[in-house]
Length: 53
Image 1 (cartoon, one colour):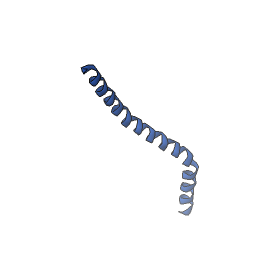
Image 2 (tube, one colour):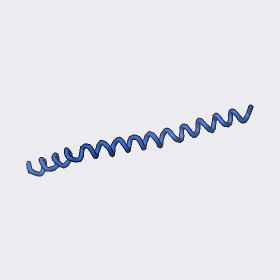
Image 3 (spheres, one colour):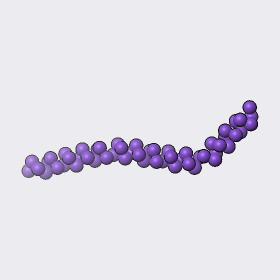
Image 4 (cartoon, one colour):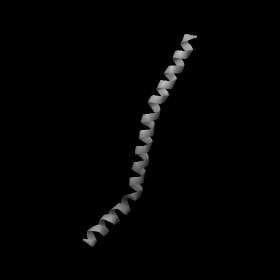
């Protein structure tokens, strides 16, 4: 039992740098997915305001 737990901890410890890189990538991707539509909406609103004048 202990051997299994120690092995699992060792594997997780080995993979920690890769896991953090993947997590950073995922959070960046989520931020990108949230930011782009907001920017597009703002630009379209700004263009509409400019064309009315």
